[in-house]
Length: 229
Image 1 (cartoon, rainbow, N blue to C red):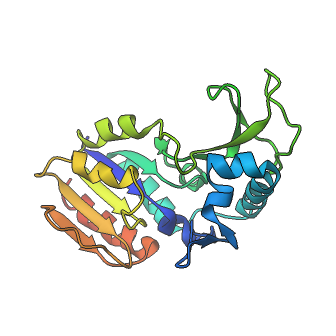
Image 2 (cartoon, helix red, strand yellow; image 1 turned 180 degrees about the vertical axis):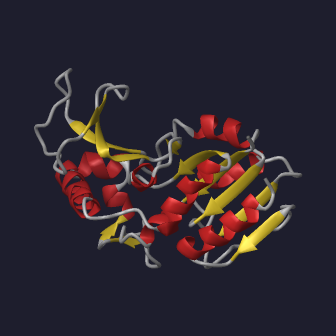
C-alpha cells in the first residue's frame, strides 16, 4: 500500500470554527502571541496563559471535524496515511485518522514544568494555578511555544522522506520547522498543496497546486490520488 504523508495547518480546522493561530496584525484573539505562546510570556503571567488556553479548550469542545478532516481519514481506505499536523486540536482523530503526529502538542494535555516527560490527558477544559504534577510542580499546557524545540520534527522528517505522495493542506508554509518538511521529500515524489493563497514554491518539482479552501480542496485531492493507486 502506497504511503501518503499529509502536513496540515490552521486552514484545515478553520472551517470547523477553530480560530486560526494569528491574524494579519499579529494578534491572537486580542493578545500578542508572545504573551500567550512563549516561555517568556509564561514566566511573566502564567495566569493569563492558563486562562487563554482554558478558553481555547472550552471553544474546542463544540468543534466538529469538517469534510477536510473526514476526507483525509477516508484516504486510509486506499493508502497508508500519516497526518502530520501543526494543529493542537484532535479533529483528525475524531474524523477517524488512525496515525496522527502532533508537531505542536495537544490542547487537551498538560505537562509538568519540572519534568517535560510527565504529560497528562485532561478530563476538563480548565487548567489552573495550583494544579500540580506528581512531582509537585505547576502544570502547563502541553503546547510547543515560540522558542521551544519541536520534539516530533525529526520523526516527521524521516517519515516524509519515505512517502510516495506528500500533501500540504491549510498552511502557508511560513511556520518553521514544519515548513521545512517539504525539503525532505524526494524530488521525484508527487506533491500537492491545498490552500486559498498558495505561496511562491520556487524550485520545487512534481507539484500540483489546488488553490482552494481545505474542504473542497481535499475532495479534489482524493480524486487525483485514487486515480494514481
